[in-house]
Length: 504
Ligand code: FAD
Ligand code: DLZ
Ligand code: SF4
Image (cartoon, rainbow, N blue to C red):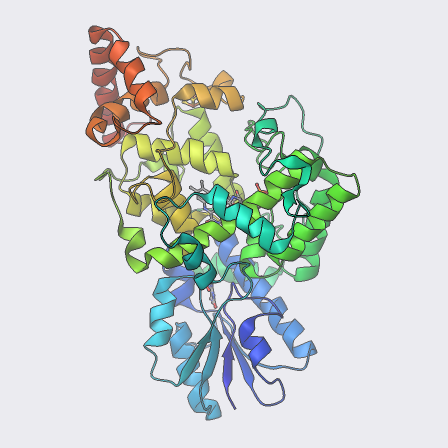
């Protein structure tokens, strides 16, 4: 008898470890453990989602004829770690060894490799590009541009291809996307499912102090429910997904987004099958090409690409700090008061739903951390904790690389920074803010306006010669000297008040 490990983000019947095992002789091990539930202070919704989905998957496995040794968090024998549970189960059942699918975090990969049990790790075949596919693509390239990787993925999968040409003649239709926020949203957002109250009680009792609202809990926790959400979104959200992908609205956390990252990352949905369904909606004339191409690019492009980077760069990636930033994470990230409406909106919905869409993560909370110079390790831990879709393989490249430029430009060719103007253009946040987005200096000046120039000025040596940033430095240099001094002085004063813990 061998043990077959199934982790909380590996809930797929197609999992390589299950495919290689024999249900008549092998035993599946699944375990809710404090080690996984507390290595960062996860949002309570993320923990509840994981446990509910794990329990439902164990049921599905048993119905399919598997023997499952399932440990609940409150089991008195629970050893508290994945490796502890495997060792305990192996000695109880006299197992010959353990088969597992490679986890999505280096932390757990090394813990499993160091385990005093005979074990066999298999590649995670839920992804379209294997590690060697990505390495082959990356080999010898000076810059790892996502766009070129994505084109290869289109050719490999055949998605949106017209023979060997891209559908419609172009690879990328972003030009037609990214419209400012709409006045009204005519999609009602994600489906809401009934939760397992036992799990909610357990999470309430064991994680009382974690940041985030547990109730109301509405996530899908089975493959069938996740599939229902996908279909619901394809009908109601996909047609306008492209147009308003980057828009932000007060009290409208979901807009036209799919809300499937939790389900994809946990294994409840298969990325290729999702893209094929979305392509079918386009072929049936239900959704325009700009929406469908934009969505498929996020999945077979960005999602696969960031995973490739995570595994290629190795375990020390999360410790990178190329810009030498060392500020503590401001309290506003944990729900502390702030006068910045864009920040309080983005954090409040993160607290409520364990979700924020891409532009809120990149251009509000990420932009603010980068401009204020927060230590990227703290930023990384925050994102890993608060979002229900966060596992290191996908979170770290997005945060350390794309958002904080801490990897010295492996992912982004220039830092994603902006003044208040971008947020103003894409949202209605500024209209209800205590600051004035038009003010560049003065008491009511939008902090992003001050901090943007402060960032460029303090990192001049690093970025002045970046061909994509020369223009910004020229604008700065053309500014009146006294104006520049005022901007820098006011930015310093504002940062000083932030450091004092003032609700700025
Ligand atoms: P949609 O907007 O509907 O997009 C569709 C799908 O595309 C998503 O479900 C997701 O699977 C995929 N996708 C889109 N962008 C990316 C991307 N940059 N990287 C990987 N997949 C992408 N995504 C995570 O899944 N986990 C994370 O921990 C995570 N952390 C992020 C941190 C930062 C700083 C940034 C800028 C982005 C992060 N993302 C992360 C990517 C993106 O924000 C989320 O995938 C998306 O918001 C999930 O919501 P959705 O399902 O409604 O996505
Ligand atoms: C995120 C998470 C949580 C909260 N709890 C568990 C758990 O108790 N047991 C488990 O097997 N997995 C859990 N997970 C998901 C793991 O942390 C995830 O498998 C690793 O981080 C690798 O991606
Ligand atoms: Fe954010 Fe500045 Fe707009 Fe306020 S004015 S919402 S701080 S961008």
